[in-house]
Length: 200
Image (tube, rainbow, N blue to C red):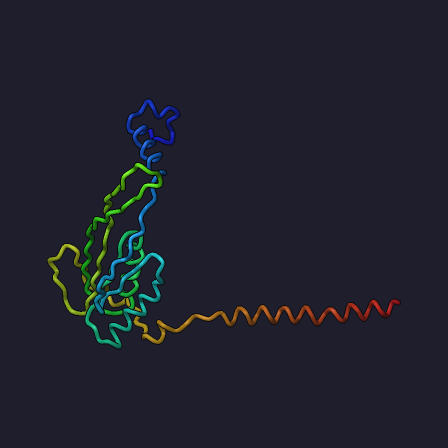
């Protein structure tokens, strides 16, 4: 059974320990550390959980077409991993003949907590964060690498030029229809007023 389903946590030592930990952590707050300025390679597309997939696709188009790069490297950590995989899959379906190598590693991050009460010491905790790196290359890659994937079938690729990828998607049609309907209703109102005057 889980701790949530236990009515008497004192009967279960591991739950008692968990409750004590929660109570102790209420006396601390996490120290916000300044972000490290990481050197970003020109061919790197760094994906974040809040980022836009379409923006990453546009960046890939610029690297492949305008800048004539032979490869791009998509990187992500933590909860951005799923978006990085989605970005890579879309890019593979926009540019033909892309070889792929995927690497998944772990990075240790140390969190520091400062006490909210006097007499307590600072606490540090180490956690593992998953890191993903996906390299997509027009040139052949090492096929013996365990993360290698050959280019997908060209019939699945729909090439789109960079101008099409970066073109904004407007909503002009929807707004135009809405305004038209509003004006039509307004024209009917004077007719009703005319009938009323005639009866008087």
